[in-house]
Each structure stands twice: as C-alpha cells, then as structure tokens.
Image 1 (cartoon, helix red, strand yellow):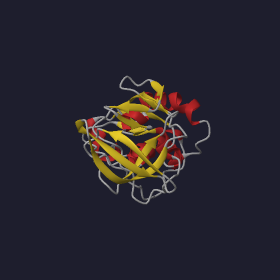
Image 2 (cartoon, helix red, strand yellow):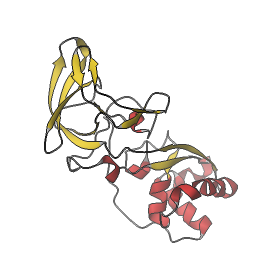
Image 3 (cartoon, rainbow, N blue to C red):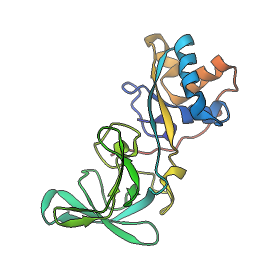
Image 4 (cartoon, one colour):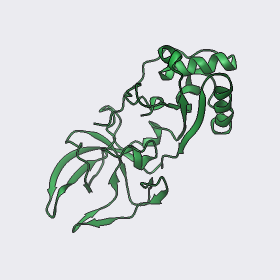
Length: 219
C-alpha cells in the first residue's frame, strides 16, 4: 500500500509511491509538502502521468501498543475486547477487526486523538460504549490513519517497534503520489527505488542509496 513506509506491496496492482520515501533517498526532505506538486508536474511532463493521491497527518497522540489479551464481547459475536499494553499501563478497547491476535504490536488511538472516517475526513475520538462495553479509544487500520482506503484489518507493526512510542516517529505524516507507470517501463520503475532513480535522473540529483527497508504488514 505504501512503499515509503516499508509496507509489503503487490506491485502488479497499486501505483502509490510515497514522496517521503522518494526524497529520503534522493534529496533533502526540507519543504517536502511545498514541492510535491512540482514533483508531480515534472514526472507528468517527462515520464508518467502523476497526481497527488492523498495527504495524511498522523496524530502525535497515537501510540504503539501490544495486544496481551483477547476476550469475546459478551453482547456481540463479531466484536472482541482487546487488552493492550504500552509498556506502562494496560487499556481495554472494543475491536471488530478479524486479523488481531495476542502478541501483535499495533497502533492505538486514545480519546482525543484525531483519525480519519470512511470519507477521509478527520474526527476526534471520544470514549465510547459499544454494545454495553466501554472503549477508551481504538486500534487503527490504515484507513483510520489516512494512509489508504483499506479497512480490512488493523495495521500490524514490526514486533520490535518500541511500546509506548509515538506512531508518527515510525510512520511520518506524508503526501502520496499516484504514478501511472507505462507498460514499457514496468521492469525498472515498479518499485520505490525505481521511481526514486527516475526522479534523481530528471532533477539531476544523487541517486538513492542502498538500504534495507523495514516491513509493516496488514494481515
């Protein structure tokens, strides 16, 4: 879904490329948001049709937690009560995602955090009571984080991600470009590094450095 984040991607389907990921390799990230439209125009004029797909902002109140217990919801078959730990305290929230398991490391938004609804609009979370069970916040899918429209499950973070840390320290706010790669360039630009090399060539910048990307997955 998002190569700039190190998410696992099936390159036969999505065409999303993260500006943050590209510029982390080919140039300084200063004034990224201000130059993103210029970058899209350069790619469109000289390489491939490129448009801004979305811009998202990760709320600094969203933290990294570990699921330590899952209980069935007493009043709803498709919901569960997930107890999570941030390294200091435990919190129990209601969750309907089918992919969560004990031991997973996931993002947690407490009451007061801003997340995205199904229409892509930000809203502020409040403590809720869902089928008789209190839920102080929620675990997050990539849709609720604004990264993608996918709402098939909670975003599963690498198991070594520090508990209690801010999600924004691992997944920065970003702008995502939709790059329409032509069939005759499928061999060399259907990856983050390929797009970065194309940008480097067009802007006469130093090419991307070799690096090992981490992986976030959506189970």
